[in-house]
Length: 292
Ligand code: SAM
Image 1 (spheres, rainbow, N blue to C red):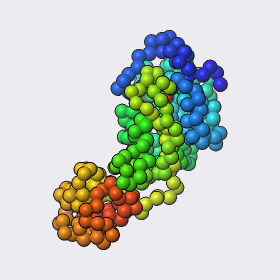
Image 2: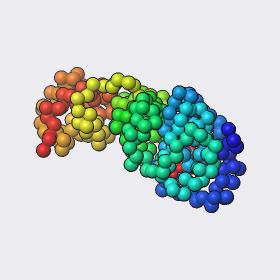
Image 3: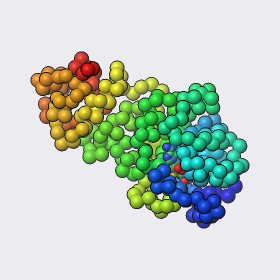
Image 4: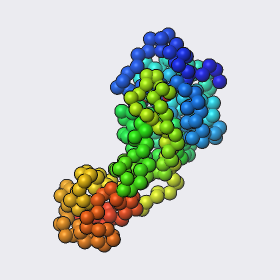
């Protein structure tokens, strides 16, 4: 590997030389600690067999290490100003495809087909925090051939992704992430590892994507409506949250009977339900789905 990009001095040098200006609206906080990058690559379990998708390469700090460990890397960057910079900092990387695009607008299925014959790929990224959830949900909901997603996110968001029922962090994001994947909290990263420094602690988390679906749900869109409805008002009971939900046509008594049929108490709150219980609840509520 040539000179390591992720040092404070080289990062500053690149920024000054190219007159790059950080864009807050793109969530640009670049890693300046090579040890953290090594640990991300290790957590992602990248080998020379892997095709890796990186979201938001920035000036190439993580990309450089991904190229050294993977068979091939595709890095998708939205900021046009960074493309010529990346072409220079990563000029020697023979196994890299650089794509200028908004990750949310890219046809990832076609990319995986072209680059990896549709076989499962790994995702690795220091995500822009302003769109962490939309990016992760887009990756998960499209049911792309992915084997794992290793991402740097705000620590608080990583906590929510892996939270268990009944805890304060458990919510619609926990259910959505754990419906599609098995999260593993890797490690915490302090603000001092970035330039510029973010205001909060960060964490790396890996989402392992199973080959088979974890939960049998007939209509996932309805399942997610029920989950969102259940968490819509946190201090209310599930019955109070769901009885007037616009996606259901159900009386309070019938709703209570459905809960009782599932062995759930009348005063149960959404945050107490496991994903299996949400799956059973959405199946039981399906006949009362409001399709109007
Ligand atoms: N990977 C680099 C690093 O670790 O130093 C940069 C990480 S920085 C937190 C996030 C990067 O994502 C920025 O380069 C930003 O321009 C890019 N980005 C922001 N929104 C994006 C989007 N919708 N699609 C692709 N890249 C995006």
